[in-house]
Image (cartoon, rainbow over all chains, first blue to last red; front, side):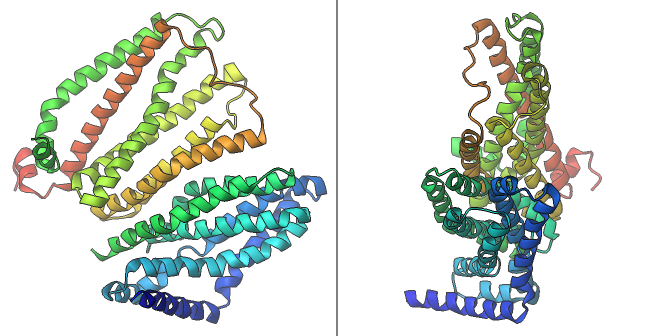
Length: 224
Length: 247
């Protein structure tokens, strides 16, 4: 019985990944957006190495937050419009699986490209090599949490303007931003950063059940 | 007995009737206590030996900051009830409390800023408490913005309820993380938290002001809620009869 849950999860993942890869813009756009935002900071602030490397944690994290919000409204809107979502709620599969799969897809097409691009961003912002691993770890945990929050925002603002879901999500992403930048800044100052990572992990662990269930609740609002 | 009363209060017409009875009492007690507290605090409380008369803004600043936070707790509580039991009135309560909460939070920010200029020499400091109050203000704005975009009022209530539950879970995390962020970036430039404890003749009017603010909130909430009930139930018979029976 429990294998059927993973079956339905993998079916949704396969289908959505196929759709995403047919249109390369879905995973290229967040990546390019991220790099453009990062590039604009040296252009605006001047190219001094010391300045840039001290600002790098914040710049990378702000760009990552914005880029991961870019594709948020596409999480459910397409499926809502063509009726796939209706089909899913009629079927007997638990709706938690659907939301969880959608979050994973969103992370794969935005979080993962950002993770890859962040290394390039770190190089052009003169972030020391020792801070690469903390940066990648913090982005791994943080962008996953952002995908969960983004799914809730997208479900609440389904069929509304894209900027609305961003406004809903951004105030709630403050802890992620603070913890994420603290991880990188601590590693720059040779301080222990594991505590911040643990809190980000705890937020993710609570967010997966909590935010997914609330997202289901928010989606069901459209079917009353 | 209590259960029966709670269920009755969940029905908009019964709540409306009950609130008509308590409204004058609420009005009198709110005006009286808030009036006494403010007069006492602003005119008769002793002048602070360090800050002079400027400190008197505290009698508005502190209660509004406390109210801004406790109204959010109240909203999240209503949101919980609304999501779990689908009680219509709790959704209306949530919606009516939001503009009051955001006003108190804004008032706390503005009075704090006015207080900060003469005492700290600046309108704004990136202190942990100020920052988390500002973020609380943004969260209120997100809740109100979300409510206004959804046309179906009951659905809008539920959507905002869901978001307020997330808010309740995440606000302590925001407070803690802002605290850590503050200590990481700049080790305390000033300490407002460890100021010498207040003398009783300054503290008593503050307590009265706080109670007065709570009563004032209850009054505003009841008035807002009554309007909300009338607006949403305007097609129902009891509203038509109440407003002079056109239907």
